Length: 427
Image 1 (cartoon, one colour):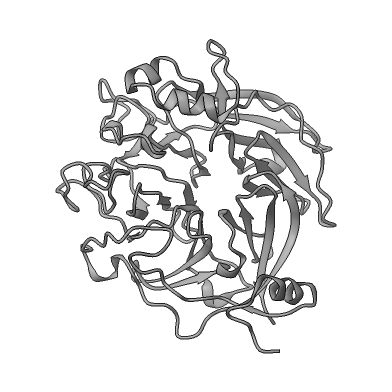
Image 2: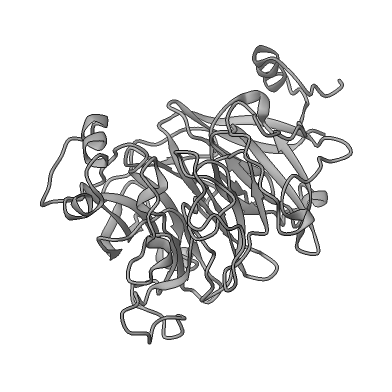
């Protein structure tokens, strides 16, 4: 059966149910696309944006492993082939190999689900087989200011002046850990290891040395006016953070000995890094970042470096104005490896090193929320030479992408009901 590149939804369902073959689509959005703006800034080097698509689209098989999820945010593969899934409203669920979804795991901390905040990332301890520790990034309620989890409360709070918002926060970004019970029904001895008033928290990644890397967004990551917090080292907004597994500060953190600087900071100058992963070949950290209107970025993160936001940016603010100084480059500030205009709203991030798709080894995959697709980037010599868009026909916001133990791709749709998809070769 030939692969279908532009299948209607009903045709796609039939193909999936009866073992059909679906081809990836390689169309690249142009300025003025329905989900973006027509701002197209000049790149710093030719391969920094708008790479061409592949000569032939990839041929893939897509299966729905779980449905009925509530805005799933993240997943982790347990050693027994079960999958731990985090849902934004504040639940952890376990999916077994037969497709059965467990009731919510108990023992979690109090989680405030409001707007796009709630339960966010999960990651297993590198020694999970021995200690069964699970780490969570989540939004905790402010016990001194209890509020309803409603859009009206959020909108009222967002309309406050910046200083008043900070003084009356409705919740706190937090990172904590607990032990998953042997029967996978509860988290035991949960402990908060990092929570500060001026902090974002998006993704969690364990580095090769056992330290925990945390991507932190800014107060302006929504529709708020852009502030200068990511360029200031006295707060944890718009940073990549690095702590030990117990929450203590590593001795070799780049700013640990500087007075007036938050010692958790590993790198700074980010807006909303919603994706993070380690390069399996080098151990380096990569992040994907949402710009406001355009300027989504892919960054290779090095310790102590400044990634520019909002002093330099390839995007505009929500009022359509240039950000910061209006410059695209500045001395002492890092350039993204790649950027997108119009905005894709990039999310989960993965560098593939599996065996099911040998032609994809070393390729980067990103979920896209606004653009509703999975993006594959092929790099040569550290530069993006090819960009392919997959899952366009499904029309779903994609929140996370992970590589399974067998080499398949696992993708979460940020919907209610949401799905867990498995991508494998078509033949």
